Length: 166
Image 1 (cartoon, rainbow, N blue to C red):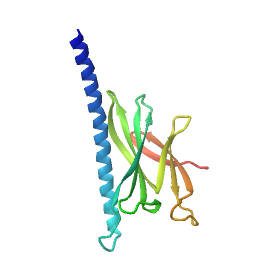
Image 2 (image 1 turned 45 degrees about the vertical axis):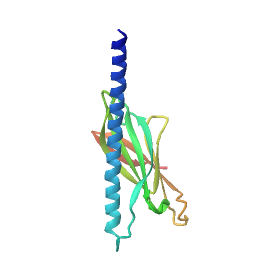
Image 3 (image 1 turned 135 degrees about the vertical axis):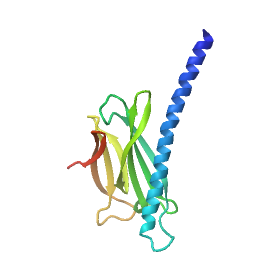
Image 4 (image 1 turned 45 degrees about the horizontal axis):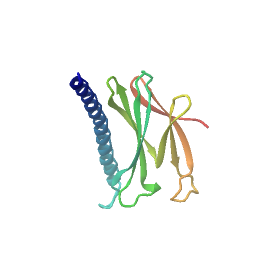
């Protein structure tokens, strides 16, 4: 009986770790694809080989039911910055959505890019909001101060980003 309980516990632990690494792998795949695309875009406008080369600076994860199917999803803010000289003018944020499925599995749905810096928040009604900071004309390079808010929704299996009017 003890062996059966131990085997069951080990099986549950192993399964949850494997599922977690699957989400981790999906996130890492998304990060690598985004870095590749950011580097390609940066290189298009460059006049020589000295163009921005990006890396992941940080990530922020929120768990919420963005598609309202009763299963928790993962909304992830991926903050990218130029490798050698990271500052607000070389930053970009991608918000990626991974839809939860039965058995604690996740599938990448889509993502949206936002200017400079952005963070994700869940409001008291359960909505997912993106707070994006960009520059006013008089802002110094260090300090973008223009806040724009967006609401993220999933409708008919598609990700939408809508500006929230003040």
